[in-house]
Amino acid sequence: MSIAQCYRYFKMIVKMSPYDYLIHYRLLKSIDYLSDSTFNITEISEKVCFQNVNHYIQIFKKAYTLSPKKYQKNIEKGIYNNANSFSFFHLTISIQHK
Image (tube, rainbow, N blue to C red; front, side, top):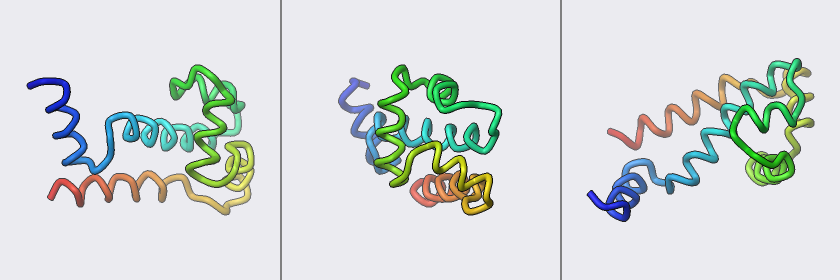
């Protein structure tokens, strides 16, 4: 299978490009770390393989319309439940595989 075929097959099944899937997965993983206030934003961006913290913050803001720090504070206040975000993503992937 060629790289182009693999890309098309992946996109057909998952409904997003491999790059978008990877970014989405990294952002969801970062939410797990954001719920643990022992990590700062730079550490979290490194843990989820963003080599540039500013790029991580920019991508996060684009996806969630607020900064990772603000999101972390909202988790601490109980406004967001990180488990719901992961479950929603998991449900989306499961539905697309049926």
